Length: 238
Image (cartoon, rainbow, N blue to C red; front, side):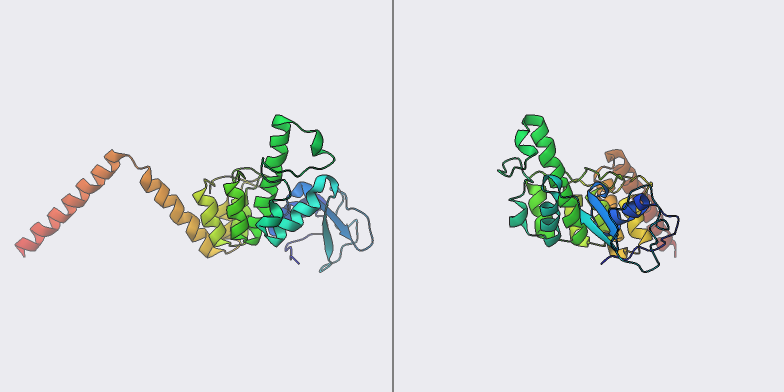
């Protein structure tokens, strides 16, 4: 169960999906929303149109085509052994009715997309072993969901500090912006995930220090020496 705040009666289903992309960690394009006994809620319709009341429960289902439901459920469980059987690496024998016709680049793109979705969900849920497995088998932590979010965005939203560290160590960027212009750090700040925000901030400054120009370091040492010299002279005079 995920609580979505700041819902409005004129909010569209698409806007709600964009929030759920972050809060539930399910990429926008895989979501199929239903309310009460109604059918699939269409993106352009509003919550008021469907008579969604405050506190109402909307069911988030996954589109069944191409094996996505099984993959999402395995990612939610965070079991690497299940994920390994569901087409998240190029050496996988997993096939669907659709993918069995793919060859070369088309096959690689399909696998890459599945690996990203699995990484997105496991990062959101904090399944460190599964995140490690996916990264080691080629999942790209810089890929983005249809609303421009990376796995680091959703890990930051949930304050998954260990996953944040792991994603950063594999090249995830704290500066990537989603469709709303938010970075992982700004999301962590907005949602009061102080620990995760601190992890990203420290990573940023460590990287900045590593890439500092040698002349900058020399000048810094020079000024430190000058300051210490002034201190010693003042001490001698007193």
